[in-house]
Length: 165
Image (cartoon, rainbow, N blue to C red; front, side):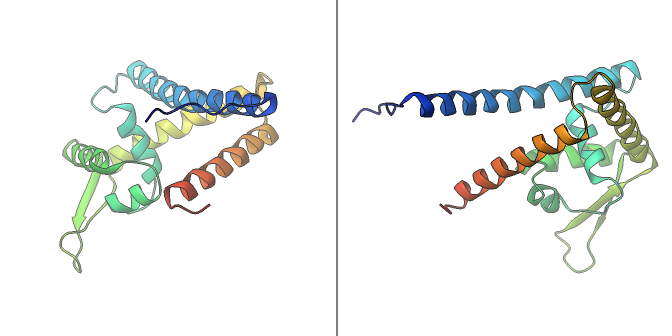
C-alpha cells in the first residue's frame, strides 16, 4: 500500500502552504525564544540554569503547583518537567513540599532566588513588548490578533488529540 499526497486545487494548495509556513514559524519562534533567553542569561552571567528552566520559573510565578499541573496547563511535557523541577530544587530556585494528603504529590513554589529569575524574565519580556511597539512592528491590537489566531489553532489541535471533529 502506498500513501499519496492529496491533489490540491489552487486555493487549497495556498492554504496548505500557509499552514506549513505557520508550523515552521511556531517551531522557529520557540527555538529563537530559547536563544534570546540564553543570550540574556549569558549577559547577566547566570549560567547555572537553561532557558527552559528559566521559562518554567517565569510560568510558575507566584503560584504553588505540582508537575502535573504544569503539564495540564500545557507548558511542559512529561519527564522533561520532572527533571527540570528536580534540578531547580537542587539549585535553590524552587522549594518543594510533599502533600500531607497524597504523599506521592509534591508541590513546588519559587524561592527568593527563583523570584529573581522570574523578575529578570519579566523585565526582558517587557523590553521586548515595548520594543516591538516602538519600532512599529507589532502593537497591542496586532498582538491580540496573533494571540486569537494561535488560540484557535491550539483549540483545533486539542480537538484533534481528543478525536473531536
